[in-house]
Each structure stands twice: as C-alpha cells, then as structure tokens.
Image 1 (cartoon, rainbow, N blue to C red):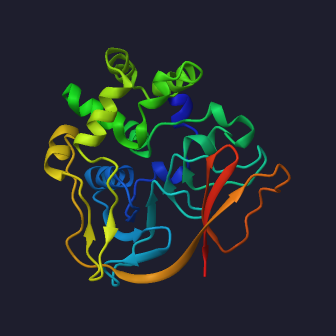
Image 2 (cartoon, helix red, strand yellow; image 1 turned 90 degrees about the horizontal axis):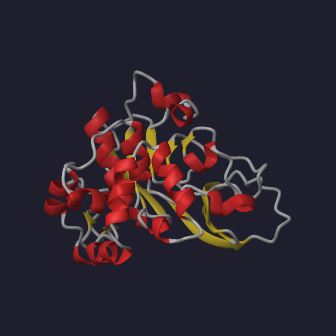
Length: 269
C-alpha cells in the first residue's frame, strides 16, 4: 500500500495490540478478510452477521469485535462500501474504508474504490500475492474486483486504486485476461455462494475451501462450533432523493450505498 493512502488509515490499524473477535458476514469477501485477520493477528471469528441477526459463538469471549466487509456506523471495521450520501455526510471514523477515507459519496460515486475488502486488507498487511496466475485471478474475482478494469469509463479509476494498493502486478494480469475468464472462475468455484446459518446454529456454504485455500495460499474454513442468536435486526432499503442530511438515527447499525441512488441499512428492532 502506498504511503499516501496508508497514512490515512484509522489509528487502530497501527496499534501494536490488535486482539479482536472478528465478525463474519455472508460472503467470500468477508470470509477471506477474516482469514487474513487470523493469519496476521491470530484473530478468530466469534460473530456471524447476516444483516437480519447477529450470532455469537462463544459467549465467554470478551474481546472487542472487528467487522469484516461490514459498513458499521460505529465501531472498528474493514470495509469497501460507499457510506456517504452527500460529501458532508458523517462516516464512521473507525472504519478502515478507502471510500470513507478519500471522501467518496453519492456526489462523486464513480470515483469510488470498487475493489474488495479482501484486496484492501491484503494490501495493508503487505501479504504476498498468490504465487500462481490462478490464485491472483481468484483474488480479483472476489466481490468482482476485476470488473472495473473492463469498463472504458472506469478503467483509469480502477487502475489508480490498484496502484495505490501496490498491486501493479494485478493490472498486468487483468491486461492478459478478459472479464469472461473471471465469470468462468466465479461459476466454477461457486464464489457467489452465500454463507448461511442452519437451524442448529452451524455455518454452512458451498464454497470449495480446499481448492480456494490452495489457490489463494491462505487457509479458509468456517468455525466448527454452533452460534447462538444475540440480537435481531431489520434490513431496509431507501432511495436517495437529494435532500438527505446524511445524519443517521442512533438505531442504524450498518449503512451503505448500493449504487448512486439507492442504499441499504440495518436497524435494531
């Protein structure tokens, strides 16, 4: 990660003591981010958040939580979403999020970082890229981080962020491939598979952990113990009308623009 971006990350990212319980959400981007936290800091998943409920695995663990690929309105998290409606909207100051840090909002939405949370964390922690071309392509497939490269209107912005992350090598890979190659990988390795919780509290997914772990050179798996419901939430959607103040009510837990005109948020019941 280039110094000009790294120096703007929240202070907690640099703290010598980074001991947290990670919060997993329902897709591979969050799972890879959790695996990175485990690889680098030894942090383990103790929460599962599906945007309607949050579950906890071990009720006796008292470590502070760290959301992964999660646009929390307060508390520490890694995230890649656009969380400002207007340029002066309040954002979570503890969110390690390129778009929040660089003042991306609905006003300049198409200047956003459209890479994955996993890529952001990979860069910040200085992990070596996967050794094989397949591994690099798998990394680019997460959260469709490849896609902006193949849009003539967005390519320069997309590659600017890859350079900020120090991933010029990935631009070379993108130049040697086309977007259909990534769609084929997504389908072959079921990268769009959800992570779900069953009626007994166990997490389940169709993601092929063995091949993905080998390709990414990063151990992926789900916690083997059951989770227990901690809090219930309600997911809602909204349309940007242009006159929002950008101030969120205290009961909003997570908030993100899904495109320039629409947003999704979760509230406590």
